[in-house]
Image (cartoon, rainbow, N blue to C red; front, side, top):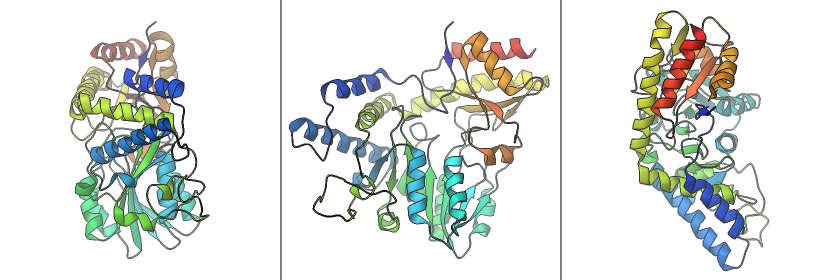
Length: 385
């Protein structure tokens, strides 16, 4: 049985061949570290890491490549930014559609004296932007928000939120886990002060590599929460005050950066707009194909029904059988891989009315085909009818 991977919201698969080739080349023929080795292969690798920072700077409209910091994933990035920036007595706004990568750090910080409030969203996951300004307090220090929902794919109006944040002199911190690599992001135009990203989703890189990018004014406002050797100013036991060393102690995930470098070049060659167009065409095909099941009372489709303002993520609830049972049958009988449950986003499920049951999520990627979508539609019909 051929396998059909429809869980790209969790991690993209497959990756471009160039990604695995680049990682293999590094692991078998280079293997060096950077900022430590005094030999040519280490210097060459350092150039590739610098190039990767440049590629990310250009992709996201950042001010300087030195402000690109590598981490393990977007969760680590969000933790470093929030916990290094926020202090007791500060107030933060987030959306009611956040992933636990945002919510758990905020709840942890709340116990240390940081307040937060959730900007409501409707049952399609759309932010109620009109309520934002009235929720800003004198001690509001930041807005932290996902760019796109991992549950229903609805895109938040980051540019509009950024304009409001800028007008009120507060910082905007964006979780781009579900958008980076498929939706255009410009930090300057959107007034984003800190952009947190992961490499293994729509950026098409390996797992274990992510990062964040800071606006110049944000750097000194974040206290590093991890410290150690950087290979620079080794005579001092103080944390470097320059970028990116200020936030990059320890050995970097160089295989991950090498793979991400190849992925970024692949995206540039194919064109982000072409990738988005393909994924949304598949999304439309899927939604159109399963809408009759909703009309028959067999499922409920959550989120936006069209392709405007969304990513290629579709969540449904089954009204006759348990979602987990459906996921098992799709995998066992059709080779279709999905994700079922609360998707690490209980707040989002509460917003759209699917808590605590959860949903089954279908998330499409650049390498999915129309034939695979049609198979998923057929499978749902055969199982549910």
